[in-house]
Structures are given as structure tokens and as C-alpha cells.
Length: 391
Image 1 (spheres, rainbow, N blue to C red):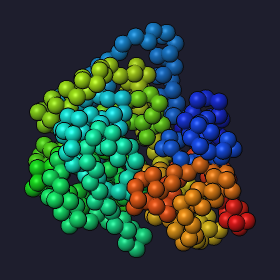
Image 2: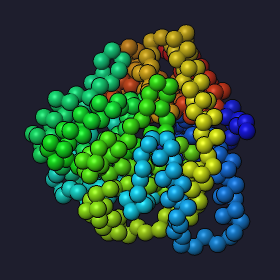
Image 3: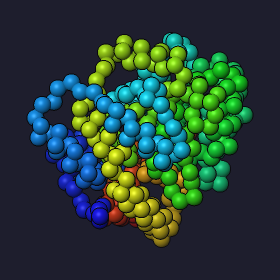
Image 4: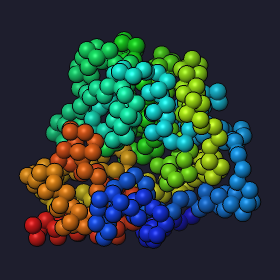
């Protein structure tokens, strides 16, 4: 079956956070948005069909999942990652960020240190600080255009600050690293050595480019699984973020009990009916659409590579290994943060994610979402090129 990812779907006027809230977010109304991580593609028709049936039924009462839901999720992770999950490991939440917050509440107390690796998806920092925990940053090292883990710094930070919890982003957002197995094992060994629990956000795990393989952190060994909370969701893969459904896997029964207690204390129980329907349909029937999507995204990435080389050589692409979010280095332009914002928003009429949002280690960079029709991507790059020429 053919899928038309070049088709432009009008999103303005739909209460889209990406398109309809520029003014509320301090931007001008005419910006072209390539910021927040949702896609400009309609989800798989097989998912739409199941959602239509649920809508037409007309009753939207409290709902739960049956065995078919779990089997669909289980099969996806078996087939794609060789990771066999058990039903009793599963705790469903409305989102991964919610799960991060629940893990922080469950496994740490106020004043405890929580470690992450910046530049990093900014809600990680927010849930640490907003819950009165201490953020400890072990920054990634950028060497020859490639980000690496500073293992020595990471272990020192854990020891010096009595770190209790490590928030791992795998694949990493925003820098696009797909961690190799040896890197994850080394992280696991450090955390085991110092009794650090790991919350592994693997929401982008389905998006890896050729030559790169995602390894589920908890699947590396029984010992690592025993200290890990694995956060997954169909939302990035199938563009379902607004339906609020995530699948959190915790093999350690005591950790799972603590996590569920935190979720219960937050007053949360049943998931969104449509999220449950969409998740099951995605993992049962969405594979052909997803494969076509990955091929299209790879072509979009190649388009950006070529365009930057031919038209915007002063902006460097940090070569992504995964995700549909790319990390661009603007530092050679020599602009301050406010000057770059003026260039992008007021001159290029674009809405991107400033690297500073991801921590001070992201200053001078911009995150761009390439999950859009190629014509939209081309328009955005042309607007940026024009703005630079006229500056």
C-alpha cells in the first residue's frame, strides 16, 4: 500500500500546539513551525479505522485494556528489539514525562540528586527541579561533530553528589545519538556499582538510521533490568501524542510497587479510551506505514544534508543516528542567543527549538523537526537561507 507523506495536511485552526499557539508562546503569528516533536503526517490508516469505529460507537466511558492490548505491545518489542516483556511488568501512564515525574517521586525524596546528560530534552530538567530535587548534569562531550559520554565525569558526579536516580535518554533527544551496546553496558555497570536506579526514556527507539541499532537498556542483563524503569510509547512512532498513552515496564516487583503507589497518589487510573485503541492498532497493524515513514524520513535527512552543504555551509549538521529531530550547529555565525532568535523568528519567520532550552551545553544550537512533507522542509530552509543573505 502506498502512503503519501508529501501531502500537506492543514493543521491551523485545530488547536494544534505546534501551529496554533505561536502568539501565546511569544512568537509572531506567521512563523513556520518545526519545533515540538510531533509529525505533520496523518497516522496510519489502519489506526484511523479503529479510532473511527470507537468514535462511531458513541460511548466514551471508563475503559481498560484486555489481553490483546498487551500481546500487541509485547509482540512489537519482541520483534523489533528482541526484548521479551511480561504482562505484570506493565504500568500504563498518560505520557513518558508523567512517568519521569512519578519515578522521581517514587524513588527519591526532596533534596536528593538526580543525574542527566545535557543537552537534554528540557522536561527532564523541569520535573527534577519542580519536584525539589537537585539536578546533576554530566554533559555529553562533542568531539569532531559527534557526541560522547564522559564516563569519568559521570561516575565522579554520582559519587560526589550521592546520586540516587539517573534519567537516561536513549536514543538521545536532542543530539540524536543511538547508544552502542558497550556504552550502555558501561553505564549500567557504573549504576550497579553505586546503587543508582535508572529511568530509561526509550520513546524514540523505533527511529534509528541505517547502520545503527537500538539496544533496550533493561535487556542487557537481569542485573540491569532489576534497577531499570523503561519508558515506551507509540506516540512518537505513530504520531499519537495527543491521545496520551505510554507503556512503562518495571521488572523489579518492589520498584514497580513504589512506582504504582506514586501514580495512585497522583489520582490517575484509567487511560484515555482512544489512546488504548490507537496503541493496540498501531502495534498490530501499523508496521507497513511505519516502514514507509522511516524511508521518507531518511530521504528528508538526506535532503537537509545536501541543502546545508550547497546553500548553508556555515550551519553544521550533527549527524543523527536516530530520532526525527536534528541538531544543527549555528555557532559559526557568531551570534548571541537573542541575535540568533531574531534571525530565526523575525527574519526567517521560523519557529525552532533553541538549543539553550536543553541546558547551557546546547547554546548555539537549534533543534529542528524533519517529520514533515519535504516541501515544508524545503520552504523552511529557503527562508533561513534568505534571512542569512539579507542579514
